[in-house]
Image (cartoon, rainbow, N blue to C red; front, side, top):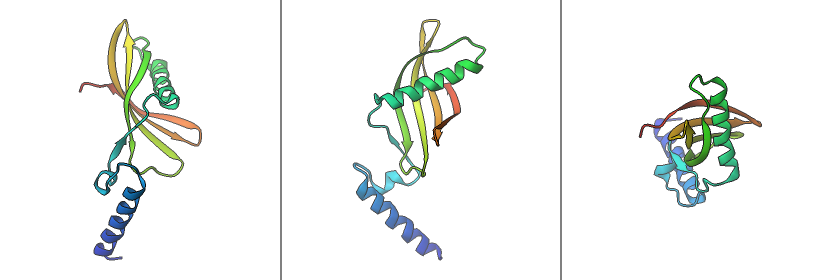
Length: 121
């Protein structure tokens, strides 16, 4: 397949997906992430709590206390059977609240915490 044909196919797919996904454009779907609309969804909040539990199992700094997931992103185009999340989580340690970023992957009822770090933004 020539480069121009491949580009045409990718463009057509992006336009079709953009027509299906509410509020999306072809530009925002290619290689980008979208905001999680319902951040208070119990599943999203449970993922944040799970991330804190995982970190507490290996952290030498003392336990974090989960407060809530404040925002999050998911890939604009998800892979089949795999869900990725980039979550911003509020948690406290010694009564000091900080924001943390966590990358989680869910696949076939299993979860993996790819990274977890303090959000300095």
